[in-house]
Image (tube, rainbow, N blue to C red; front, top):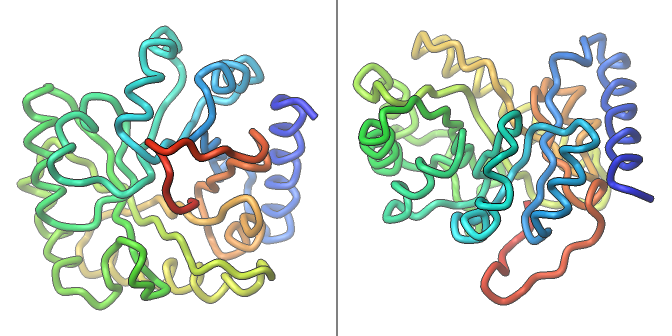
Length: 240
């Protein structure tokens, strides 16, 4: 199977899942997660019409960036954990950081974006499963609302919504309650903060159809598009 045919199959599955849920398939973005895949694979996906990509590590994407710099229509989001000391480089390389997990990191990104004279989209990562090995805000964290209330002074950031990586289960239905919890939390945060928060990034290769049924606006699919990954030592990390 080629990357182009894999993309076509995933788009068809997204469309069918949206129709089952009574939703417009056009409301749901497909993010091709290209971590640990070469820039040539990204170029192949772009040639097949894919424009949205997710990367996990700043340095890995920096190594690919020169090859991809001419792809003006492609957008690249950072979806992996970001250390605050790499915020400046992330703000330079990415169109969005979808894994903001602290007010301090948001402030660092805002300052970096201001120096670059750019507006950077961000999503707030929520650890809905309460897993110690994963980053993200606790759903009940006071700092979470504090971050949303800081939007007015974080003038170079646009907080677009929330992202989550639920605990893995073999049965996709096992993630449904986490997706529903994120949607309900987003709705509560929207009411409390007055922010629109239109985006819900949730759902991956094995469970994105369930996520769509629970309101996802962006599904992150890697293996089903690019195939199995190898994990070279510099970039080894947990799956997203």
